[in-house]
Image 1: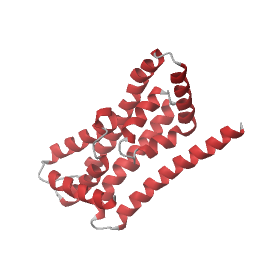
Image 2: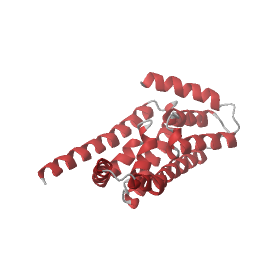
Image 3: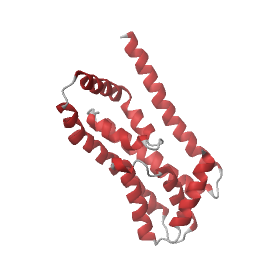
Image 4: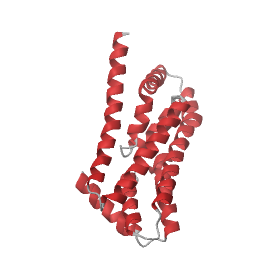
Length: 206
């Protein structure tokens, strides 16, 4: 998996290199926003794009890493916000019109999950291709507490969007940086699993 990631990242680096700085910022920001904010963008390789963008910024004198990570943070953050709103305004009314016991049970089960584990799930989902496109709309659909979602979204955009970009930026000169980005992903994924397990056994005892 790491070898495929490296090959894909190198491929994107070669494609990004000839692009003018302004267009480069816009293109990267648009890809990250579409992947996280528009359900149809689930197939986009966000991780590889971020790492490649960092590599390009490290090798080009006309690309500013601060501007790049600021755009990426805003694109990742706003993408998830849009996904949440779509779920809240479109997904929930659509499901409520389907008056079936099975659907109501499914909604209730999802609401309990997001109430107990939603914060960790929103952060950890950033590190899973495809899944990160669907978690925000589902969070909106089940009416996850908005302020919990807001904080998890901001942290997720920071550790995923900014973190992976900086890993690409520094990886050429500091080899262990790339490994540390994987460790960060494992931490949040592990946290979400532990949180879900604890709440599951609490529910069994209740």
